[in-house]
Length: 459
Length: 178
Image 1 (cartoon, rainbow over the protein chains, first blue to last red):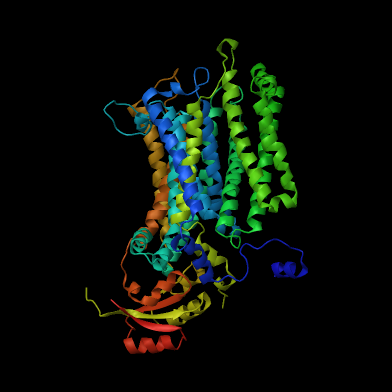
Image 2: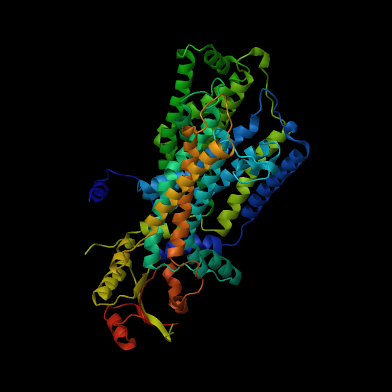
């Protein structure tokens, strides 16, 4: 009733979640046609090819790393962490938006999430996969990484459960598994739709196998809905815990700039901040190329921009508290760290970080910026760069200037660092290109529930 | 098990509203072995066909508790019994540092139980099912809604049930061969 009043008085000029005029059939056809009937365009081939080549560069960089060891990177004592951890934290953070959209917004009944949750979840999976590479290869002997899991072995050895690094193994592997399950069960009804729509025999078989014989029975839907809701309920504390545990990798240590209680909330907010930036960087070109403006409307862009604005301020609060505590604690090392950030050898990057994460995103207060795809795309890019710089500042400035000047040093990434970093971006893009080509990138069945005809009036 | 030549009679509807009404009337008429199919979850439908025993939450709870216990006891056993590491005389049973892995294991086992429990209770994967024999059933994953009365229902008789379904004014009616 209230909605109706607002609409007629024009008080609420918000764009709709789904453009009017759609039916079950048009929604189904439009989304499934992208996968089933739309010819593979030249643009897709070029984009996929470019991503694939960059992935090959990643394999080359990793291959050389396996032969030579981590000495090919810029890390050396006192900077043992370098790009590997910077990129790990950056990628894991990006993944968080997917779970936020699919789980937390589901629990909050934000139905606008239905058109972006599927590819945001895919983004989560590929981002976490990219993230996982870094700590794995950073161990130096990745072929022994399974030693971090507790399993009975002839060495009579067990992992140390008081170490944040082992917590991280559990948090990240659980996160990946739960995200994969969530994504897959969300896909089952849509795979059944593709099975029933596909003309090609092999496509029918493959989608049919993956759909596992889903037939949309009311009993199945009832169990499905409770499983989906329970997964959302489980994924919500999980996603908050994952970046918290990642921040423990730092906060449990005693290095100045790391040993602080603000880290968990500040990391989680930063994660969602960068994640939404990545969602927008993907959604804006996708909706343009595949003509999905009916489903991913200005409302989605606006809402994502608002989430970025809000989380951006939480991150800004984190910076403020870090700076304040550096001064207020009266601790000489914390004070020196603050001084180093503002005037030390990496000060330029600290100011760039403030520019990217704090100042430029403030243009999102302007409504025009929030609805302009081009500007949003550019601002999202700036935020992603800013969030990467944030992790660089945290890792590198603290490690290069710790307690005793005799153990100070400098960190310079090598070409292998850069190749590995850009390589994971290539891998991420390759996976995204494959995903939009072979799976429905918008949840078809959840879009159907948004249509007015889906409503059942009570007796 | 005796196999009937007919698996059931199926009626096709245009909207979720009509399907829910038809399902309710069928259930009220005394049919118990019935099922309804829709292209998206319709909350009222499970109630309309008289389905109330949803065990997924219980399975998930059991899974989550098992996960939490496994996680904690594993850490306790490793840190205190199997591989005690004495660090400056600090307690071996350092429970605060075991919380995180316990939590993660709770979530992991809970999530796995929710998904596989749901699939198992639904009897999936089941690539073949008699309802797929009806050509129009392909639209059940698009924009059509189906109601079926299974031949195993004691009240079922091919003619009478068909007549009953006709009275619900469906778009079409088909016999489902088994």
